[in-house]
Structures are given as C-alpha cells and as structure tokens.
Amino acid sequence: MIHTPLQQIQASGHLSPADRDNLQAICNGTHYLDQLVRELLDFVRVEKRGYKLDCKPMNIVERTGFLCSTFQETAKARNLRLSFTAERDNIRIDADESAMNKILNNLLHNALKYAESYIEVEARKEDGNAVVSIRNDGPIIPSEHRSRIFEPFVQYGNDAKGVGIGLSLAHTLAELHGGRLVLDDDTTCTDFILTLPLYRASEEATGEEEQAAVAPGDEPEKPGLPTLLIVEDNTDLAAYLKRKLQDEYRTLTAATAERALELLRQQEADLILSDIALNGMSGLDLCKKVCTDFETSHIPVILLSALSSTRSKVVGMECGASLYIEKPFNMEYLQACIRNILDKRSTLKNAFRSKVMPLAAHLYNLPHSDEEFLSRLDSIILANISDPNFSNEQLAEAFFLSKSTLNRKIKGLLDTTPNDYIRTKRLVVAAQMLTENHCRINEVCYSVGFNTPSYFAKCFKKFYGILPAEYMKEHNAD
Image 1 (cartoon, rainbow, N blue to C red):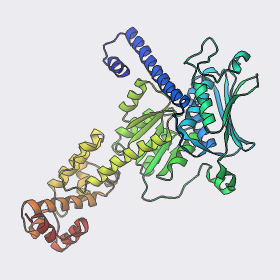
Image 2: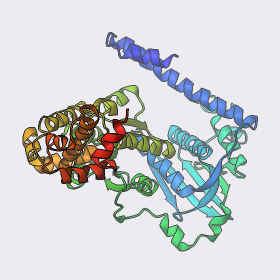
Image 3: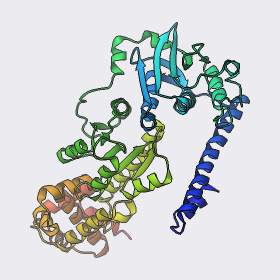
Image 4: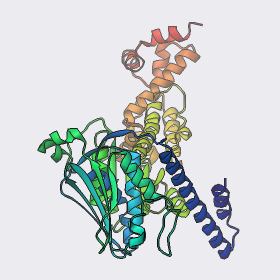
C-alpha cells in the first residue's frame, strides 16, 4: 500500500535530485519496516507456540556453505573476509529449512553488521551434535549484556538497529529443534555457537554416501533432460547449485561470462542461471548479449544478485532477463521459478502441433524478435505450402540465414528441425482442408505439397493416429 505508489512516483521522471534522494530514503524505510513486521510476526508465532516445524533430513554443511556464499558479495563490498570451513562434507541434521535459514541468516547478518575485518564460519561434529560457529572481530559485547543477549528487545551499542528480536527468535528456533544457541565465553571475539542434534540415520552413513555429497565433476550425458547453464564465479555456490539441480536437469557450469558464451556456441542450453557480479564481463552484459543475439535470444535468463534495489531489478529486466532473484534466495523458490519458465517454453514447443493456424507466438512471453521470427516462419511456409520441393534450404534463403543457423534457431524454439516443422504445417493445413473445405483426399495431398497420396496417408496417420479418410469422416459427421 505504501511501497508500490512510492516506486511509481520514483519512476515518473519528474523529480529533482533532492526529491529523488528523499523518496529513496522513504522506500528504504518501508522495506526495512516490512522486514521488521515479518520478523515480529515470526516472533509472535514462536512465542505462542504457533510455529510448526516441518523437519526433514538436511546437510548442515551444505546449507551453511550456501548461505555464506550468498553473503560473499556483501562482505567484499564492506572489505570483510568471509570464510567457511567444515571438517567433513556431510553432517546431517533433522531440521525445518525455513527455520534454519532464519537462524543462520540472522547470525550472518549480525556478523556482517558488526565485523571489522573478518567473519569465520565453521561446521563440525562434536559430542554427537552438529555445531556451527559464526565468529567475527567486531566490538566485544559488554559483560553486562552477555547474559541477556537472547532476551527479546535487548540491544547494545550506540548504533543498535532493529527492535532486538532477531537473536531471541533464532535462540527459540534452535531450542524447538532440540538444540541451543549460545554466545561463547571467549572475549577476544564475538562467537555465536549453534548446536543441533545429528540426524540419527546419519550415523550409519557410509564413506561412499559422504563422498556423494562432494561437488560432482563432469556428469554423464542425460538425454531428454533440459540443459541449464550455470554462470557463477563462486565455486562453492556453483557446486551447490549444480548438486541441487542435476537430478532434474543436465547442468553446464561456467565461471565467467566469456566462457558461458563459448559454451553456448558449442551446445544448446534451455535456460541460463547467472550471477551479476562476475569477473570480466558482468552478468548484465551477458544477459543483454544473449537476449539480443538472434541465435540465442530464445534462451531465458535468470539473474541472481545481492543487489536488492528497485533500480538494479529494473536494469536487469531491461537487459532481457526473464527473472531477477535476490541473494540470499530460497532454493525451493528458485527451482519452482526454473520449472515455471521451462514449462511455458515446453508449452510453446508443443503448440506447433496445434490445429490452430497460424501459431500464436505472442501468447508465450517470447522476446519480440522471436515472435516476429515465428510469425514470419509460418507466413513463408504457408505461402509455399503447395510446393513439394520447398524445404529447409529455401526456408533458410528466405530468412537470409545459413541452414545451420536456421536449424539451431528452430531447434531452440520448437525442439524440432526445419524440415519436420514444414511437414507438420503441411499436415495441419491438410487436416483443416479435410474438415472445412470438403476436398477430396488426393486434392488435399497435392495442395499441401505431397508428391504421392500413399506417402501423404502414411505421414498423416503417423501424426494424427488415423488415416485421412477416417479423419474426414469423424470431423464431418455433423
């Protein structure tokens, strides 16, 4: 109710620099207020025992490492060294993912807020428990506050922000998991230690299972699965994303935008998942290049970034991104976004089999250049539908493209070859003529560019499941 009208005023373009600065300050305040309200609601739910945990087996090493990687950009921007170490790759607990994210995010946010030069995060097994330590070299918490640091609404320091419920919420959520969150007695640094019971079945895990948690190298070919290109220069985050996505997709990884473009010249990709802050060419430049290049403009791009301002999101979308997701992000949400985008593209790829003519490209949220390409593709084929010699060669000439470029484009958009698409259009038009024009089958056969009625009948049955005569009888029954 407040934030959206403010954004509209900001976008109006009729503001002085001073007014723009003031409005940005108000927008930042509303965003901060929204975060506080959400935190307060969680706090109230926990205090009233209305917070229901949905616990599942979780690798706390993977989860902590992932969250640390999403804070790396912010740490670098503040000249802080953020490191994460673990004594092993797989330490499993039974936990609610959302609650665990709240605990770890709160501790990492506080560390970033107060650290002066470093933040050290460590995961280990200790006395039958999983332990996560998050320490920083910020101002030492005074002794008079240490015993009350987890009480609600307790703050310290002259620059204290918030309402003082984050640590209390994290402390209570840890207890709901049967664990504890404490402030270590060490007075040389600030060290919060989260201790959680191990997942019982994890004690029986074999060395092979732990090895399976390590980031995979070159994975085997997975024919039939969509291909994702992950562009991320943080090796830990890239390995995490690959691990989480490789069961549903064939994954390719690139540490730079330049390498990503090289991979795209070598093989097909169905979706690109790219960080914005890359060494060399940025993710924004990569996105713009992909979305403006005829050969790759059909590939949707999801941008990941620690930048959360409205302007950053607008720039990302103006570069052609299908989606802009802030770090830290929820993996389940990211997976749902990927599935949704690919499902829409799959609907487009299946739509060419529709009896509706011509293909309504504007319904599938494609770039304008791809809409025009598909519309012109249909127009050229329909104009030459009766020519039995019309093939991918003539089609490529009509577009002033090489046959390989045309093939790559149609394959990327419709998951078929140019010749197969031409044949499909011949058959769709034939079906339309059989039902609407009451033509003889032989007349239809030659009208749509088939040389012999027998080959026409064979192709028609393969596509529609019945012979042309049966099809005409069924659809002209009225």
